[in-house]
Amino acid sequence: MLKAAPAQPSNFNTYPFLLKDHNISYCYSATLLREMKEKQHKRQPTKSLVAFAPFFEGGYEKAESSVNIEFDTLANGQDTVIVSEVVTRKEFKSLPASGEETATAAKLWKGDYFLNSDATEQRFNEVSGDYRIVHLSTHGIADARVGDYSYLAFAEQKDSIENELLYVRDLYNLQLNADLVVLSACETAQGELQRGEGIISLARAFAYAGAKSIVTTLWVVDDSASKDLMKEFYLQLRKKDMTKDEALRNAKRSLMKKQPSKMHPFFWAGFIPVGDMGAIK
Image 1 (cartoon, rainbow, N blue to C red):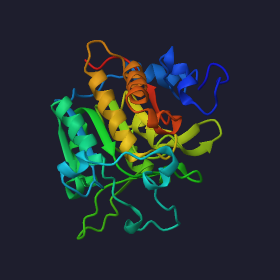
Image 2 (image 1 turned 30 degrees about the vertical axis):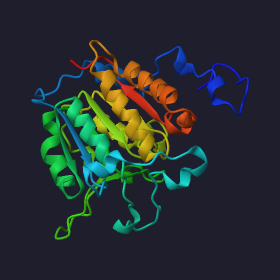
Image 3 (image 1 turned 135 degrees about the vertical axis):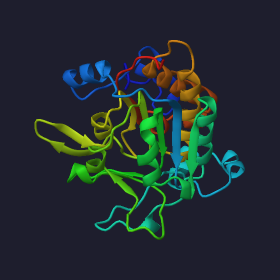
Image 4 (image 1 turned 30 degrees about the horizontal axis):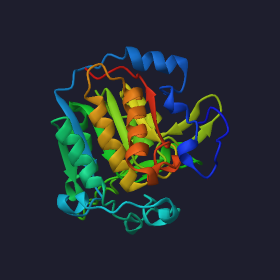
């Protein structure tokens, strides 16, 4: 969002981005915002952070040397899959920066992370309720026709009859105790627009499942830029009394300053915070 027309449209350094002066957060309604801020979990989480990266497909050292993608070659760096009537596993490509993203988040918050074949839907269902922060770096697909069929993808289990896709409808039966869920995947804020209800999306389903706040995405996001943005976000979030919206704002500004090639809003503006923005205690 801009405060005014840019002086030099071809130079993003001159853009009067609103985030330069303001923290920005969202919620689906005033009623839901109150519920998320006042939510009392049935049990307090005993652990700090858990992160999942089912499509890393490499060693941690490989992720650390991931190549930055310039804006004019975005097609080589986007986290994107082909949408079809029948989901096939071969459509999910690797996300080479997701390993470092999850490992860094876990290290900063003294948490746990699961990569590749360890990052299964079953593992997520078993452990996610124990953590204050849940981070998912994976493929996300929004369904604008039937919101309940938007999903996140987890690692395939060859001998399982499950498709390892976590649908919106599955989240309605999940009980989270998280202060924050970070959906570092594509289109997690998109879905079906229902009259009187709004957008039925993965992010909204996580709020229903018990998350007090969510960092979600508005469009297809870049794997490498997401890794850098999330690293700075978790660094900021550790500061005393740092609110979630301010932490995300500072992370975006840091990314633009340190990496001018990623100043285009495509790389950072897609991530938005929803719900209770209070600092994590």
